[in-house]
Image (cartoon, rainbow, N blue to C red; front, side):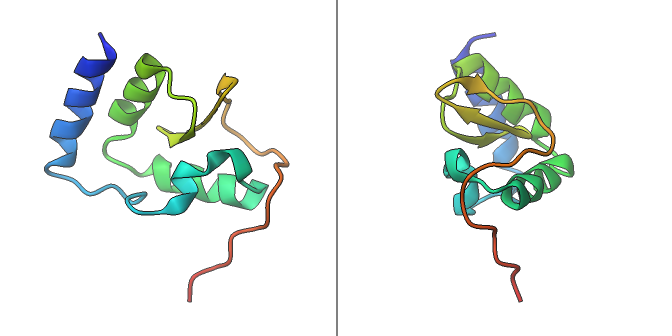
Length: 95
């Protein structure tokens, strides 16, 4: 599968489904996530209907920035899931 094919599949699915990460800036600033932010992103991804399509696209396209398909992507590539201490302030809970 090419990155273009993977994107097309994800884009098709997104026509019918709005993922919980939509418009959340944490998912585009994954290089600065605290451990709490990382856990928040993983939790949102865990229940997402397009998780596998998102992960396939990010992996196939070799995405190097953001939180995609349950994983943080950086210049070093796809980072493993799980707890870690990362720089950055903790996310404030919404009220």
